[in-house]
Image: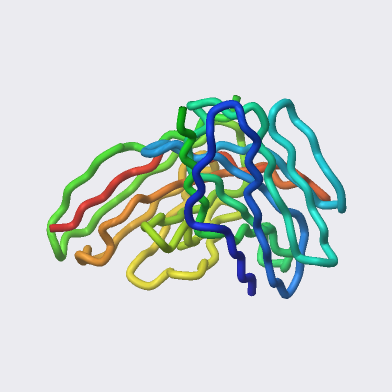
Length: 114
Length: 115
């Protein structure tokens, strides 16, 4: 099984940088996803890490350390529209049950203030 | 772009009713999933399917069943709705390939209230 921890809420100022952490304890690991979810909307894919290191995609970057069971999502030049929940999800190793499964953290609600 | 469509955004049903939630995807994905999302609990997997007529239980299958008669459609069934099944239900799909890094794509969700 998987146990995934993220902070429940964070607040940051428009134009600033914020780092959202995710730690996991797992019986196996086959990649980590970050999703963004605005209130009342579907989660949308932000990033994927399977190897250690930093993946950069515009204002968003995601980092993974497999030995530490740790990832973070870095948001730069924050905008008001970045106010949303950010979900960390770990993919199980392929179990032969026909599909990869994701286990989600409870999500971090980010509020961006002027 | 992948399109995952859930039949209703909002649904109100009564205790004891049989409830059907429908999900359709347009990208020929083999894998489809049903989650529920509750405050403080996050997304939890109810059932998933990796092929037509194939289904596997997720973490919280009790009180639910599923049907996958066609590749593009995955239905979640509440056999006898109860108030503790009031929740946001999310459908997702993805294309699986060996070593695939493809993400799951989500529908907009159905907010179901059981009275």
